[in-house]
Every structure is written in structure tokens, then in C-alpha cells.
Length: 590
Image 1 (cartoon, rainbow, N blue to C red):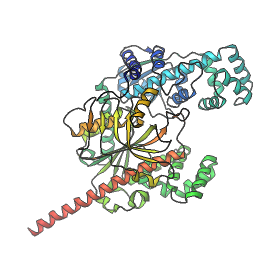
Image 2 (image 1 turned 180 degrees about the horizontal axis):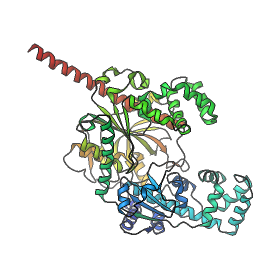
Image 3 (image 1 turned 60 degrees about the vertical axis):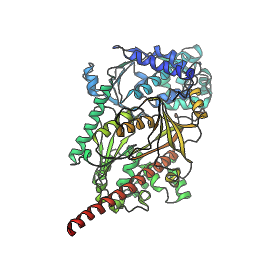
Image 4 (image 1 turned 180 degrees about the vertical axis):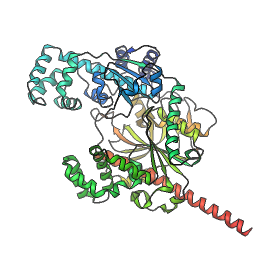
């Protein structure tokens, strides 16, 4: 198949990627500044004002949200797959470093409090995500640095130092003019700077950013060793529960760590009064307002979604309750495996036969005879969705060890070129930028499977998706051409998952630059994407958090996945029981 994106539009992105991969082959550190020219040259849609003196608030906020807070003090970033790779590179004390996290990107990182940060990567997609993000962050930091070191900048900062708390409107307007921003954009930026934005601005003024990066290990073998360690951790956890995952039929789900357990464990149902009391006494106006609005408009219909939403805040305020939650999950056959020594992808194993069907979310078992589940021999393996090619590496590892795969179901966020934030898209065509394949497959989900569980928003099936190399690795020409060809759903994992699915039932590695028909796959394939970004409309982007409506889309898609699995498993178990009964009857008659 010919490349969909015109060569001139793709070459600038390709040049940027080849530049940082060639530099990262070095055994020494590489200055991020060396990458700025090719970064700017690709005209990234996420870094629209990279070439201008004005601060690109969207690009900077996006980067800040997905980098640990210590990034403002970090001078050098190491990338590797596991504790051992860092130790082998000479950082023998890495396990004593502080664990640091980003607000909006799940990636294990450790900081030594001396300007050195180690980042754990699951595949080269983490590189394609992290390097452009660091480059954008440095470009925008230095724009502010130079502006604040002008005479006007020094005066403005000195005036703010005399104020108490956030700057008054007059001073904010002066700072906005200095940075060539609208006042509203400045306020957004100061908000992500944290509780003390003046101190952050003073820090930016004091020091020009010149970060360095280094790959301590990055071969394909390194990634495979890391996924082996990840899988071994799951097996070790399940050994304690006397469960042999490799010999059990498996439904593989890529989603998050909360939706499926919340709907299956019954913890929220058992603690409903406690959670409602918490909401009413917390004095969180946004939380209370949302509860009152939902209660007045839809009564009990979506109460569970709100309680699941409130549970996250509740656990943050009472972390000791997390132990109680985990114990409740284990009593109902839900086991968690957290990877401590490699990349941060939690896994959950859910044993159908141990579920308490009286505690299931009523929406997932409506019209299904779930009593058969007590006789099931199958399990759900749910993983916290990985980034990009990490999906390929992890599903390959699962496929190698699981004897009987019954389905692959993927729920995740995506950018949309034709819908609105929180709408749900259901693709049956995926163009993968990694393999350059276009995959055709039978998505087991339809709009009718999701729409009954959406309070608002649209569900669009029969869509065409693109699995991009990275969020920054897109430009207007790239998106525009795909849009004209009917591709409206942009994300990062579907293509890698489909490449792995191909290898799970074909006797060779996935092809390259072909149209690949996956209609012959002998198990379920299901992809559901909810929109978190509208890149064709600047200002409606990933720098904004998903609202409560995002929770609605999350649980609507999770319900659809669980209902599909429940329907298939009850039918499979019923047939298995019938077959066993028939064999016994034949033996008796014989």
C-alpha cells in the first residue's frame, strides 16, 4: 500500500525521529538543544507556536502535565527498561532514589534529588513520547527565561514579589503582554505551575534550560527481558492464589486499573452510604454540584458512575482504605500485580468462578444468566493500557504464555477529527504508522452496545483509525490528508495490538506496508475509543483534563466490554456443562 501522507509532510517528522534515534546511540549524554531545530521543523500540531517568540501555552501545559514535577530541577534524563539496566549502567543506588510521578502520564520515574532522573520505558514509543515532550518543554521554558531577563520582565517580577498570592489583574496583564499571551492563557499556565507560581517563574528566570538525555539500554532484547520480568511478576502473584494463568482460558482487556474492578467487586455498593456522606461533608463544590445535578436529572440511573468517580477522591483522602479495597477485591477473585522493577503497567487477574454475582454492577448482567459464572474456568487479564508499541510487546508476551485466548478488548483515549470530546468511536479499519499496515477487522462492538450507557455524547461506529507514532509527531498536513481519506480517530495502541494479534494466529511476523485482513481471527477483537482531544480545533486539546463526562464515556465502554465477555463466557460455560453432561449420560447408557 502506498504511503497515505505525502512525502514532504512525513519527511520532516521522519527526519526528527531519525535525528534523536541516531543521537541516542551515543554512550554519553546528548544535549536536548541539538534536537530543537528538527523539532521545530516538523511543524507539530501540538506545538503550533514553536517558531514564535510567544509562549505556546498548550504545548507547555501538555508537557508539564506529563512530566514529573521535578523536571524544573532536572538536568539529565536517563532512559532504560528496568532497575537492573540502570544498575548495570553504573547507577547502583537507584533503588534509593525518590519515586516521582506526572499528573497525566503513567510512567515510572525515579529522581536522585541532584538533577538526575531515571525514566522506565516499555518500548520505543516511550522514546517517541518523551523526547519531543522534553524538547518542547525546554523550548518554551527558555522563551519565558529570556522574556523575564529583559528589563520589563525584571520589573514585573519585582512588582509581583510585593503581592500576596496570585498576581492582581493589572500585573497579570503586564506579564501576559510580556509573554505575548492572552490573560486567560496566562492564568492557565500559572495554575499548572502549582501552588507557588511566582517561585516557579523566579526559577525559570534564574536558569536557562539545557537538559541532557541518555539511553542506558534500548535493544529489542532489553524490551523483551523487561516484559519477561513483568509477566513473571504476574505469575508470582498468582502462585500465592494457587492459580495457573497459563492453563486457563483468558479474555485479555487493555483498559485502566479502576473501571472493571469497581463494577465487579461490589466495594462501592457495600460502602455507598459512607461515600455519599463523604461527598456531602467534603465541601468540594464541584463534586457536590455534580451529584446534585445527576440526582435531579437522572435519578438512580447513573448513580454508580458518580460513586465510582467519588471513590478516587475518597481513596486519595483516606489512603488506608486502599488496603480494605484490595481485600474486598481478592475476596471476589480480583488479584492485582504491580510491577516494581520495570515499567509501570499494573495487571489484574479476575477469576469468574469467585465473583459474587449479587454484587455486580446491575448494568453488566442485565439480561444475562450470570449464575453460570460459578462454573467457569476462564479468567479476565486486565492491564493498565500501555503506550504505543508497548501494547505490541505486552500482548506478544501474553500470547506466548496463554494457551487459550478467547478475546482481545481495548478501551482507550483518542483524538478525534470529526467528533467532540467524550464521544466514543468504534473503528473497524486501523492504519498503523509503525508497521505502515492498514488493518481490516471485525470489531465485535457496535454503537448500540455503548449508547444505552451514555448520558450525553455520540457513539460512532464503522470508523477509521490511525495509530500514530506519538502525540507530538503529527502536523496539520498529516492530519488533513488522513481526514480527507476518512480517518477520524487518532491514537497510539490499536495498530500495535493488531500487529500482535496477527502474530498470534499466523505463522510469521506481521508484514509491513500492506493491507492486512484480520477477519479470520478465531477470537473476539474489540476496540472502543473515547475522545479526549480535538486537534483540528486549537484550544480544545489534551492540556484539558477529562471532566465527569469523561467518566461517563469510560464506564459506558467498560460496561460494553464486560457485557460482551459475560455473554460469551456464560454461553461457553453452559455449552461446556452440557457437553460434560452428555458425555456422562452416554457413558451411563453405554
